[in-house]
Length: 355
Image (cartoon, rainbow, N blue to C red; front, side, top):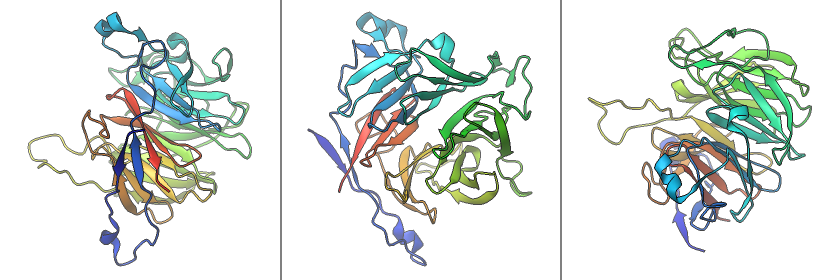
């Protein structure tokens, strides 16, 4: 199998006052994954997000925004695509009219049922693994009006399970509580909402702000629960990750630095965000965080405890192998391999960890 080897760009020299002693993971790009053509000559649009189950099957969220003339030589892929460990299609399913627009994140439970988040709706949904049964829907449908950032007839910032531009979801394995990052774009609820396993509202909290940064729009773009009971949220506009306990008490900020390569004068620069989506390494301690940096268009490897950037991998923006075009989803399987889903690149790439 062909592969491209990546020796991470080491950044430890930046922290010689208190260096991290751990060796940063190394990866190689797996050029044989996934298998193509995908499915029955399927054509995917932007991959808005992804998740991985306990069998290391990968689920892709296909936004179906394709170039219609390409359908002369292909078939439109379904919204949800399941791939096995070899990159073969297991199944595809989903009614886009029911699932909703702007597929953004997913989570697979231990029993194989799957949660879906479509940012263009006022709800999150739970399906059976094959997509045949809608098990639960939390929230109600609503018409999103992108012109003024409102949803017709829907209250904002209320203490309930009505979502507005939901971005990410995760589930507490210990009790089934559901955590939702609610507010992907300006005008949204900009909160973390917690519901019990029956979908009943439990609590909520906003992103943390001080007097010095209240002008930074709070956009919780990602959310993941760590094994040690912490909640990590991408504070996209502030180029940082905010860490909370499960009751919503703020613990710390983890800043993800970025320096443009080309001069920023006279052009829009640094507006995509350097902390957009994250995943933890597969070890029980989750020693590392892998963070999609949409400004550098690379994957930053952080020491989770200290928050320091240890290395990064990927070859920056572009459409060639090992490069990314607006990466928007990331996942790690049980062996430590990292998968990157691209919204504008309309594909997924696998980076195999090197032992």
